[in-house]
Image 1 (cartoon, helix red, strand yellow):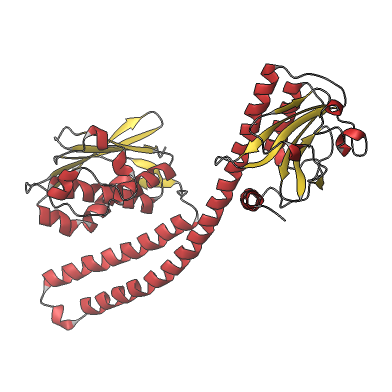
Image 2: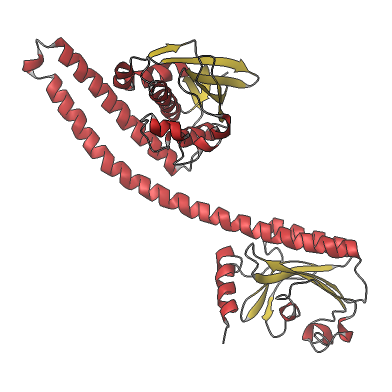
Length: 399
């Protein structure tokens, strides 16, 4: 009957997914096979294998010098020692009581003489198998070879961890795609209804003599249409796992559209937004629009927190292979020690923000970083010549 550690080990092995395919000559893929080849080379032997050991069997998931297979745990040499804390190195297995009667030594399965193995331990310290080298001749393994074998065993676990994380990310993206599809359905209908009602209101005879109201409704219609496009494209962004489509995008048009969307907020703050000449870059117009809107909204919000009339400047500087877009404000700025932390999800600046009554959940800058990274760019914060914060984004050129 399996003990508690066997149950926990079985769960960890299942998470790695390495037993899903039948063993073969190329079992484990090129990455794990390459590690076995390197292990054999550093030990100076013809045979090396990566073993995963569960409560019943030893699974050879990558091997060099012979064809990988499965054997019972009772027959396994590594099952005798892989749960121990140290390497096992035996010059002649016939002279070691642990292995002398093992079928891999007696000739029933093989004629192993030299044997060395390093345990494979998960980051939590759980033994799940071994990296093993062996030969049918008696030999020794020097200190350098033993140390190298231990380091290679750690690399095996790193590869397994990377595979596990990749599978988890794939599953997460699939769940995100399903969620995005549901959200798309749930948001598209009320947005369509909102647009329809705005169109009806704009065509109402009562508004014939109210040009200001007609203008406001027209702007509301445009905002609703942009919102619908933004929702659809951002959901597409979620479905494709965060990679940005690359097309020429005029940043000037993107920033002007963002300013139009923020018109009410800018007017309420009495902000002056100065936009310089902006270039064409390679990117996703919708995502860059969300980036610009977040940065401008932040600049206006934080610069107006002290009650003064905010000043915001948007500029672009040509760099080798791309552009540096900056959004400067004359607000309180961001202390140097806070400039990395504020890009974390659900993170905000220091206590001064709360004391100044600045609202928000701290999601905007995290979104901006993700958009910048999706474009192969970077984002950061410096001091602004206006006296506040200067948020900069590096983006690829459009030429």
